[in-house]
Image 1 (cartoon, rainbow, N blue to C red):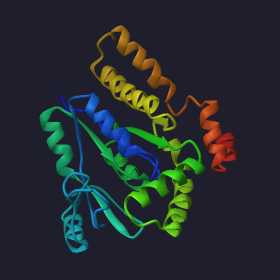
Image 2: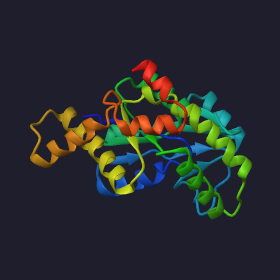
Image 3: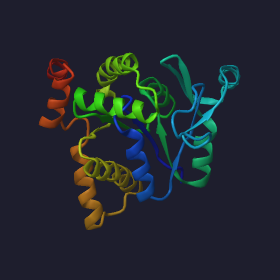
Image 4: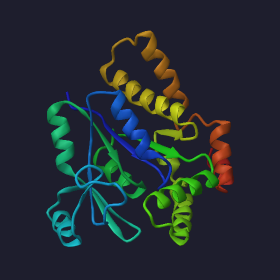
Length: 236
């Protein structure tokens, strides 16, 4: 049986990579697609682990040959997910997790309509700014202008939260990891159709609270902190 395709998106600095790393340590049968990018490695990043780092010329060649499931330009650099990642996971019967931005997610949903999409939200702009600063410091190049650009882009990305099946607020790491794990377990249980055991039933209840349609006070507070609560109230 072909596995499930999971899409996870978030503004830069939301802690998405940390959540994904924890998830992969907790669950088996979940492959992670390493994206291609034209940007240079940051800090301790290693080639073929966080990304496949390639030249703009090679990226364009791959795109012209139709090798990307999705591709996008972000802050002047190109990113893309190879179709081969999906083919390999399907052949092995494993689930596949894509860590991609909002632009890429739109493309993937068009090609794979039953993909499970998850949007990770930072709790507020202040926390997001602090995380971006800490990451810049760790990389040895604190750039306040770059941080400002990413904060501005984050608001625009958050406006797209309604396009995702699940909304996950990354406030307390342990809670966010459990919620993300619950989403994967729930989608697997729904796909297989077997009666859930007590622990799976608990996970399904937790995942249900993260469904995009199940708005909560926490989501309202996050949207309000980014100046987006009026948009949420209008569309709810």
